[in-house]
Amino acid sequence: MSLVGDGTEQSGGGADEPGWDVDPDDEPGIAVLTAVGRQIKAWREAAGMRAGELGAAIGYGENLVYKVEGGQRIPRPEFLDGVDEVCGAGGKIAAMKRDVAAVRYPKKVRDLAKLEAQAVELSSYGNHNIHGLLQTEAYMGALLATRRPAYSQEEHQRMVDARMARRSVFEREPAPEFSFVQEEVTLRRPIGGARVMRQQLERLLEVGGLPNVEIQVMPTCHGDHPGTGGRIQVLKFGDGSAVGRTDNEFAGRPVSDPKQLRILELRYGIIRARALSPGESLAFIEQVLGET
Image (cartoon, one colour):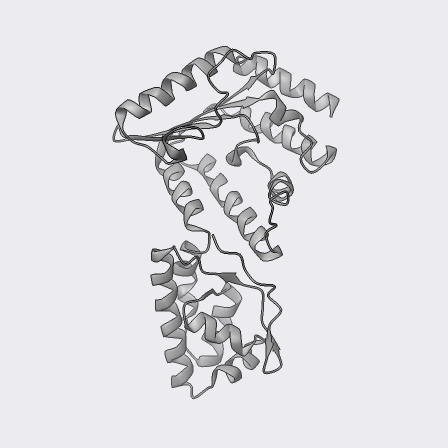
């Protein structure tokens, strides 16, 4: 995953709006952005404009225009709207916002979101942080801010937006079944401070009250379970297939081999059995909220 620059380039009198650099390993994303860039360049040239002139007309720098046309920068929706209007594209450039939006987030995040959107069952054990689907925006931001080397401001917001977009999975019809087991420490580690954690705990209570969601807490005193190796996640799909991942085995990569999946399901089943029940867990979260 690449990091964006400082987003303060200036050329031709126009400020270069902070944007998103393209991940060089994201081949599908590069293909889309290259095609979009070619269209922008074609419309600019048809309008008889230089890159610097287009940039000045829409309020951005010449360098950004060249980068977008070369498929090296992900354009913002406002950028595409501006090009469409100035070049007289009649909505043809603005219509590309949907294509750009589809590759806006990092490929790893897009791949995960796609799997989550297709799953009929999602099971997840977390021993370090609260699962991304359960996080509030403030918690996400505070958690991502702990990363070193730090994300740039634009990349940080991009990652937060990507995680927020994943939460739409709770609105799917028919609703998938969710099972989350969170270690007690994830409820008590003050990511972002007391206020952020109170909001996060309230979010857990809200989501945990949904009929298709079960959240369980593994008390720290319950040490005899097979979750000490790290996170476990298993997603099952309507066609009977599944994919899983764990931190300490299979090189941390997603696996779909039935033998490997059985190992993950066995571990998760034991973890779930040794955790507090969903009802006990919600009561426990309420207790922690009162102490926060």
